[in-house]
Image (cartoon, rainbow, N blue to C red; front, side, top):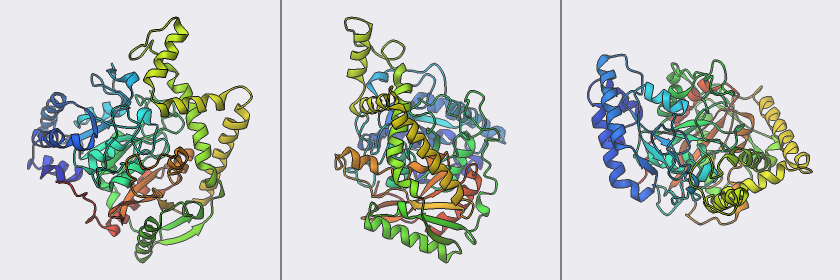
Length: 482
């Protein structure tokens, strides 16, 4: 079946004329039509636009020398702007918002002939760990529909895992690509901060947010990372020489690779079976020639607390624009302030309101130094500790998630939910590239193996991840879906 192919396989068959762009697009649209109700992965599907794009892509393919992902369908997280196609952020306050412009990543994909199938579900404004905070219902994990897929990019992870798209885009603020990738058994990659433009991404926490790819394989994720990366003058945080080059993707080796496991990311928070799967994976790499050692990065124990000060503080500022005047519906009340309060009070979900209040408090007079300023100091300390570790190591490794996919509604303690971000947060704090690769099963559910590396080390990380993936194998990766 076409939908079971990897993106690289689809791209090859498009180039060799074994498949047409319309055939591929129709296959995925048909599967979305029949299967999306089970998963709630897509919030909107652009059938007409996708088919029109497929015909345009075919013209490029027929002309020869088409870009690598020309004709390959892609799903886009619904907090990334798409001109003429709703961008809701899974929130009632943007339920019918249709942007007048494309995000830079969207433009890149369209210019290269990729086909946007539709927009994927997420935790409202990307704020959540399990993708149960969407205003339009939770996303279901294809490995077990009664379980959560992880958040906030759960819809994008499920789109790839359930074969509703060969590739997808997500955003990662504290693990929102890598965490759902781990829980859904796919590859999720967060590039170095600034290598992929954030222009057109609806901001949650601007100093932490990063767009990145999901794929069935490292090769698939690498192809999409290359396609969307590059310097963008529209993004003031975009790096020079930002383009990711994957020409040497398949030439890596694990011999001599130095990997460090921080004690702070391998403590009692890690489920016993997840720990066992991760240890077996690490031992496999040692047999392939890698060196694995235990290290200590003391600041990590403050990571979750620090993140949940900095991210809400930035969110409280970024979300101030959603006031019922400039965007979305308006709940009328007596007076401007009352209307403002009624609109935000009724149309924002509880998690978004909670984070806005926490962030506003952390930034308020008399508390800024005690909370936000102190959190930024800890962030700097954490970044320094990681950079020092990279003087002797190639990567910091850990399980991506402390647990396998939880039951929907199974974790009600908000502190426990936020603690699940323990392993993924440090990469965002320092802007480091980080990837989650499936490495086995615990309780018959996927476990992710995370590598975090130095700034601008994306090419080497993808190259080494490809070699690691070959060692892990892929036989178990397909969920029990039809």
